[in-house]
Length: 170
Image 1 (cartoon, rainbow, N blue to C red):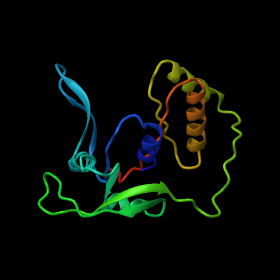
Image 2: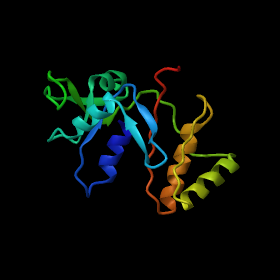
Image 3: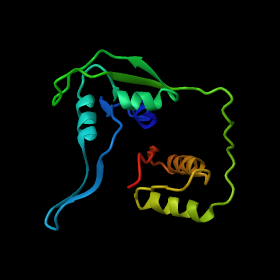
Image 4: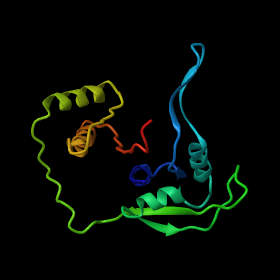
């Protein structure tokens, strides 16, 4: 949701609809050696596509996303909607802003060390590569991503950051 709100705030020259859902899906290469593509597949991906086509609202999310994000975002209620592929109307919500949390730790702007990671990020920027960061909690991913975003903007690049969590392990 944070990424969707960031997109709306930073890309104002294009009218867009964004659908956000929570659930299980497949993400990876599909096809064969003759024709292969990278795809997201699943009912929740299809539902996100249906939600982005609902007119009059920039961002809509499903009930599962709403319940998992209610502590971090403010939402406006929305009328029930009927989307293609569904027989019944569904509850949807419009995220409007990230909540400000009292007693939230102050962000420390200094960033010491991590020379090798910084070099790799700058190399990826110049090579127009995608940077993905994965590490256990407490390893400084958020600070590294903030550094990356600030550096990208200073170098004239656009940058967007988002996060995902694992729903379960097989």
